[in-house]
Amino acid sequence: MSPRSTTPVTGGNARIESVDVLRGLIMSLMLVVDNPGGASYAPLNHAEWNGFTPTDFVFPTFIFVMGVSLYLSLRKSSFRLSWRIARRFLLLLGTGLLLNWLGKGIFRGTWGFEGLRILGVLQRIALCYGISALLVCLVNHKWLGWIAAALLVAYGALLLLGNGYAQGPESILSRVDSWVLGTDHMYRRGKVIDPEGLLSTVPAVAHTLIGFLVGKLLVNGELRKMETAGTLLLVGGLLLQWVLPLNKKVWSPSFVLVACGLATLLLGAIHYFTDERGLWKRTGFWKVFGTNAILSFILCDGLVWVMSLTGAHSAIMKAVGNTHFTSLLYALAGMFLIWLILLPLYRRRLFLRF
Image (cartoon, rainbow, N blue to C red; front, top):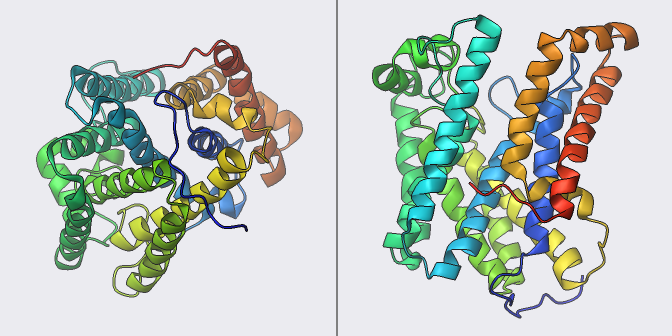
């Protein structure tokens, strides 16, 4: 590649295309892996425990991009706290709880709050957003890297000392969730590690802060520093896995470094070809998802509910045969259906703002 630009990104309200493209790419992959027809190909499944598959990097990359977006949005207000931050936090948290409650009522037939899972994907997004926003608004940015490192070191020590890699209630992760939330409000009622548990939110916040710092490099046009940072994060994570294995479910420190390293390098490459060189013109498909990412997630849950309750899912898979290939086709069809729903909103520049 030709030498990287060091020209800052200009235009206070202009969207950086590469951020929307990466967010949309990740969101489309999330829709595919979250709504399969049946048994999926191995790369479209999560790792059983230690290790990783491409699917394991989907949600963490979304968290990373949220950190990048946090810099892009809050720099417009000079990183001052505002009601907008609190509102977004509450809306994300409330929507996550509402989806869990609706899902429980639809599939288990109980509409009370007993057995309601309190945590989840949107709740983790809300916590990472809220905590990170507080930090970037209240703390000098030169300390954010050190804070992220301290969070990862503290969490790594906790995993080693608290049997954090155990796959059941004996893990410190499950014990804290059980003590704070109660087993009846945990993922599968506390029988396995909650992939969005309370303690594992700590490294996820560090994950968000790393994304924030990469966002600063992106806006300043420091792409060579992005390449260097991404490479160091990736290599550091691969080395750290010999002490703290890569594990998405516990959000291990090594996993944070590897995921952030890969996301940084990918964002840099997309930015180079889209925003800098203008070579990738046809990125609108991904931006349809990227500009309405949370709505995409909500629509995916709605699609799963409708297809299950109406029996359409079972009927379709029975008609086409339940194979890995037909399962993938079913997931892709669901993704394109959501894309068609979002397309008119994208064309009218109507983006759901949380």
